[in-house]
Length: 318
Ligand code: PMV
Figure 1 (cartoon, rainbow, N blue to C red):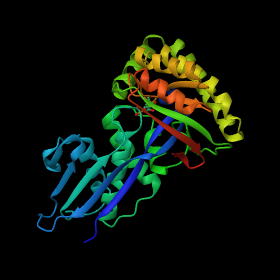
Figure 2 (figure 1 turned 135 degrees about the vertical axis):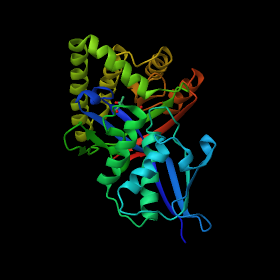
Figure 3 (figure 1 turned 135 degrees about the horizontal axis):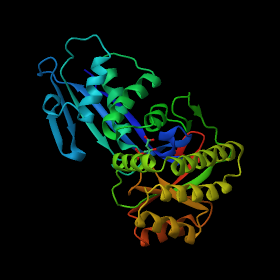
């Protein structure tokens, strides 16, 4: 019997993280050079219903029954089964690998869920469209992050740049003129769940101040959309810097992240910001020249890796 496999890209958020949880728009782009992959193959000797999962990156090799019921890998599989009318699924082995750095704001959890959902549903002979895949992954995201906005599962399921506002149909984003972004790993693990919960507690204490910040982030995102669609992407740098200041104000940046943002600008980036949930993770920097130099400077100043990528209408291409 053939094996069924699926890959999913990572993602970065260009503008609007956190504000998107409060109904403001956000822009996210798939990052194809880093991928998560799931391969599903039949276990000839296995008993019906027996599903084995192997995730060597996290040293996991287990029957799914032995994982906690809320384990995200188990949840992704159970959600697919729940969508079928099968009483017992054929025994299979699911292997999961990922090049996307975990806990870093690059969508590793959504990319892993989506790869599993796609490969496992294909194994069961079920055809799911992008919307169904995205909806199932959103259910898993809720287990990971508590109150996700839905942007990660959307951009990764559709694999195209998106302009996303919770509760309204999302739009694909046209890229008027390609531009380059450095994706810089701070090496400090982020924690999206904690960051989102922390923002919520502070928002409850000072709703007016936080609402103003979110609404400004929303305006920045709308302006960025206009610029990205019509060209002249250099101006995005100013907007990135301002978006980063807002993320600082809501308490999701860290001294290490702020230092990298500043180093990027000092080295010649047109703008830079935290990307994703924060408290660690990645920064992104808009660059148009001296790219190798800026990347070298950031690695000298503490970044553990930098990826030079071009944003095109398809997403990030190396
Ligand atoms: O850290 P990531 O890549 O999962 O991004 C989180 C983005 C937030 O806006 C902070 C949360 C969300 O659900 O949109």
